[in-house]
Image (cartoon, rainbow, N blue to C red; front, side, top):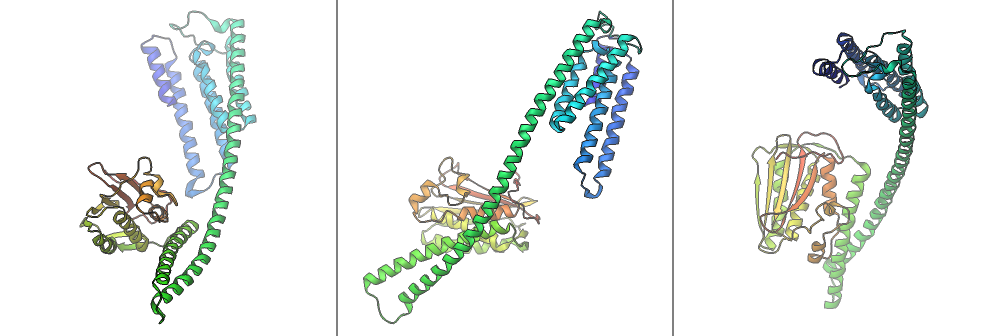
Length: 435
């Protein structure tokens, strides 16, 4: 950018404005900018070759060298294009802003002092006639570089501007760095607390599950395996207790699964036939759909074959989304499952004619324990963890999941995309399906 700007400004001023400029010398300066930038680039490539880590001290030295070289180049450009009579000397301010952001306060003031020494020295040498002054004939009508009062006033204004800009920039940068450090410390503490919370929940839910399993076994034995018949009242109470224990067991199992996934952050992946997993999920959902006379259709692309991932979790995700559609679709409705090959990934869409998603809750429904307001009206009992688990599974596969209401009728469509060959456990990867 600097080289292009210098060459363009030189051509425009000398050709169109007819300003007298030492064009050849300015082009040599532009060439020097190209050379030293390429040298720095090669130096950085050499220092980072083979994924080597560069020390902060080395980085600071590189930045300092480049800033000093930039100031020397800018001073040379100003010398060959009018010196103090060239208003582009204000470009020194840009360097103060950059160094104030990148370098510590003390080094930033050193850079500001270096800029004033370079520019002030050049102006003084031209004023004394020690070095030649290149007048901008055709642009400046007076020889300001020989006016002592003008020179002193301009240098004072420039110096005060550079130091004020340095002070303000470094002050703001220091405050931002302190805030960033505080945010990083707070984030680290939150992550640690979240990890401890997950471990606590894992232990607690595991213990609760053991007690619930014992209660469920006793109730089952009481209802079905003991020889003595129960009175109608006792059987009704036992059956209600058994159903509630089953629902509580399902909630604890879901919470255990989600907590384990969040704690480990990893799942075992391998290549598996996706079409078989989809067919199994469809078969499980059709049994429930038939009870409500819901029509289930599907369209699976012929090119769907191998997918890299965890087949059980992928299958549970598809099954849970299908079960949700069955649960919240009225009798006589329809559900359609579409699996598309997107080349670099697989897109799964499940559309239904159900109750839809309340406005503004499309993203919230994937949060833990959140249930859509209209879902609570249809079914009061629910864990609020099914969609959260589905979201975690898809994210662990490097994909993304989303939902929307249908535009051509009632109901909603849940979709998720998973890269075909992604072997990582990328959390929250933002892979997007093709249109």
